[in-house]
Length: 201
Image 1 (spheres, rainbow, N blue to C red):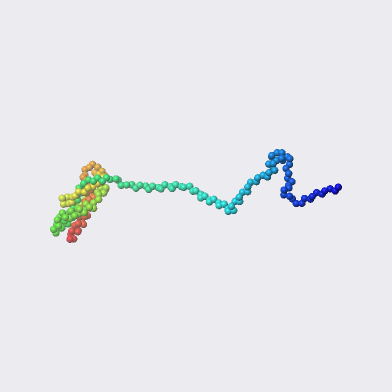
Image 2: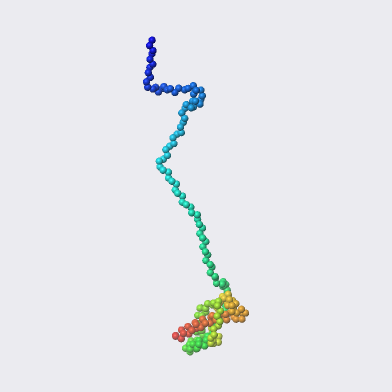
């Protein structure tokens, strides 16, 4: 009896596969786990094609240097302090014989002898600024003091005491004597100007 020929299988059937489970794989659960494909990590997203900006370069920090202390100017020496206390001092100034002759000439024209003396004395008192330097009474051919000029002026006490300490340590002279060497020459100069002015009128 003739044998039956097997049907030739052409192509592939998607339902058919040859990967049948083995006995050893069915026996243990580990085999089943091995048969399952391993999970792969999800692909990372493609980073932006833009280049990353470089961080701005930090400016170098320069340490602060404290400024050098300025040299203080040396204090200038101050004049000796004086208080404001004053004392009334008599100022006297005699006239010389030369001045007396000029006054006599004006008196002959009707001008009182006291006028030029008082005008000169008033001007001299306004200009007089006593100094701390003692000046001796000048040598001159003076007439009696009654023909001269006398007044009072308030003078700083410290100035008078300084003159007395330097030139009259024993207190034998008056305050008037301490200042006469400064005041009398100024009075003479003022008297010369007054006599010349009056003689031209």
